[in-house]
Length: 178
Image 1 (spheres, helix red, strand yellow):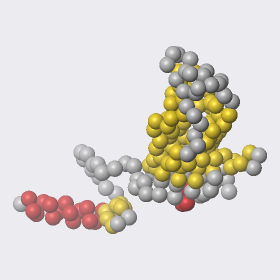
Image 2 (cartoon, helix red, strand yellow):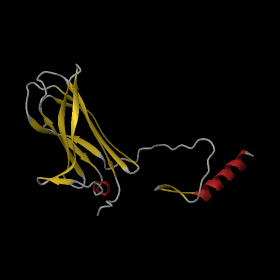
Image 3 (cartoon, helix red, strand yellow):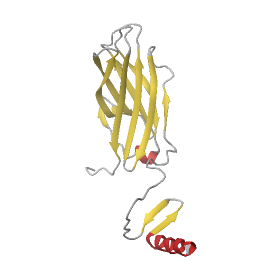
Image 4 (cartoon, helix red, strand yellow):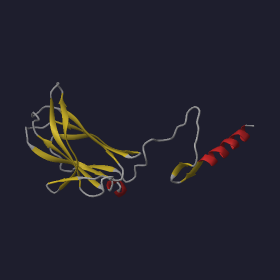
């Protein structure tokens, strides 16, 4: 009996689904009572990476870096610990995210002064007290596969511990304005 039920379920699924090395495609409407689950929500991340800058400014530690693509969205995140030995005012290169060219081609930059930016924003950094400082974060499209992150270090009090997180999500779709 069990083998007959399993066979009937397999036949129904084969009518509704096409399963191959590219995944599962739904061929028809599928009605489910109860639960349906999958192994992962996050897609295969081959071709995605983050490489920290080798010459990152003294006093900056990358505590977390991640890049995740789910469906038609790409999220980049970097958390930093900042403890500067002296008050400085300079921009510093944090690192490079690498994405597949097919994803990078969907990221449309804006050009300011000859640089292709994907994101420019203020990122708050909190100290061990309740005070915060804001730092300019800039994500640049260096090539169709390389995205470079820079931050501007200013208004940080020397010998004070700060923590901050840069995060940005992009909608990956064809440019409807083109």
